[in-house]
Amino acid sequence: DVKVTQSSRYLVKRTGEKVFLECVQDMDHENMFWYRQDPGLGLRLIYFSYDVKMKEKGDIPEGYSVSREKKERFSLILESASTNQTSMYLCAGARVSDYNEQFFGPGTRLTVL
Amino acid sequence: AQKITQTQPGMFVQEKEAVTLDCTYDTSDPSYGLFWYKQPSSGEMIFLIYQGSYDQQNATEGRYSLNFQKARKSANLVISASQLGDSAMYFCAMREGMRVNKLVFGAGTILRVKS
Image (cartoon, rainbow over all chains, first blue to last red; front, side, top):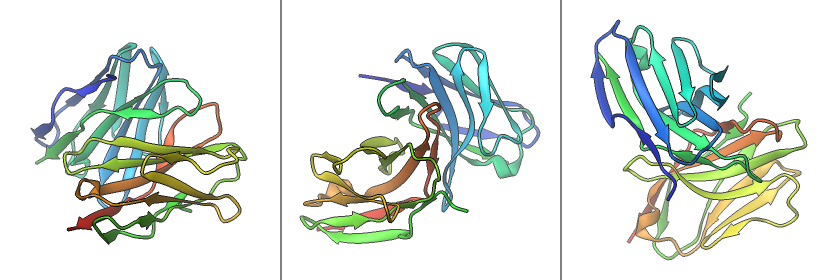
């Protein structure tokens, strides 16, 4: 069974803290993605990576950065957390296949106080 | 402009009946793919079905089928014989082009199946 895991299901941080969200996949997928999910807005792409050390901005990259030092791990970093970054964060991996289905992790619900 | 529009914030359906969840999309790329995902209350995203822009036939996967009307730019999900376990949030998503596989998602539709 393919697996995408995220380091925490729930996280509470304070404004101004540096926050790391970790995502690990065991599928040998080249492509990995970070989304945030907010009610009424669906999922919005923050950053994605198509290879180790490669990254591209998604639709809402402001306030975030990412790191991909190894193929299986893709980290999302909030340099200085703010209350408007309170959200559900979803990581996904995708193989290069006929249609590039994405496999999602269980999500991290982050609350910034 | 919204790339993916799901106009139904919430839907109810009686158990064992069929239900259609609407999705319209906007793209000028002739090559694209359309996806439906299910998100139960537990939060995980479950892939349901895929339709490619060049596919001649509507996609089907078990009780799920995709009513693909290219000229109208719609890709509605049809769930037949609804079950209580179908209660969830459903997202329509689109991949534009073949080179990169990032997805654009709609806002989602919450489906509640009544017994």
